[in-house]
Length: 127
Image (cartoon, rainbow, N blue to C red; front, side):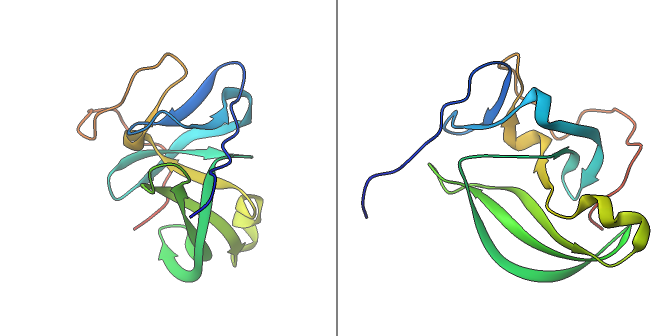
């Protein structure tokens, strides 16, 4: 299979809940106001150490999008998706950005998040 290339980030990082591989710096966090089927999700400007799956069209609460699932490069866990195309004019800001599901990451404080937390969800994402 070959040697795995993993980037170690310095600073406050979000990492894989399963294998602790770094995904993003807290400075790349755009919004915590998104949600998906399993609860809250975060929108990031940039992520590392993920592989990008096949593009597919999905109907989300904010309209049609072309997205590609993203997976942890180390353990293969599905952690979120990348917005490739947003068809609604108001959603174009998402293009090229990444969603990581909150319960699949460890936060900058090293803590994990449960799916059943009773926090209000402001934004919306996946239907």
